[in-house]
Length: 243
Image (cartoon, rainbow, N blue to C red; front, side, top):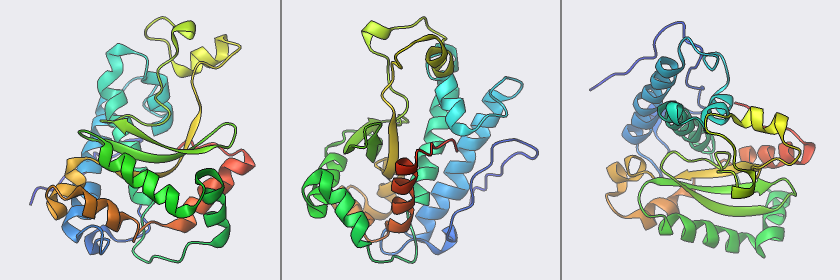
């Protein structure tokens, strides 16, 4: 078995999961699948981020800041992709649990307010995931005005790697931070991720082959609704993710 290790004394490290990857996440993912995603794929991505950011101003920044500060620089596309994929992977794995608890009534009501019912939210999320062509991610996100919605991103894309509108187009190589400092109107829609599902083939093919319907269906069995509630509470309090 191939073993990938994180180079020593590097800033970025995989976050510790709230469960043991080697035990898997039944009935959703086998021990082999979780072990691969966390101990091999995640470590590979983090190693790439460390290698590509070494000696630059991005070396000591959080993954999110690496993403947002490099996303508009065409020379940093490999760094942006690896950082975004690593962030997405971590967010996805942190959204799961090996000890599922019932969904709290207040969380159910909050989600239902935006979709008509909680079941309608699940249907919408599931339909979006299955409609995604190729590799990508399906998200529950919250906008600045508090609206919850479901969206897909492709490949390593995340909800906060938006493209500026034509009206607010900026010179290439400008960063998100510099744009926000020099424009009176932020040209990016701020979407805060609440829940995420990987629709990359590396996540579902080992256990499900091409049966994506079963993969998405079993996802709901291991969602950590306590974490979802915490993320919703953080958006209400004005907290921002910067991990």
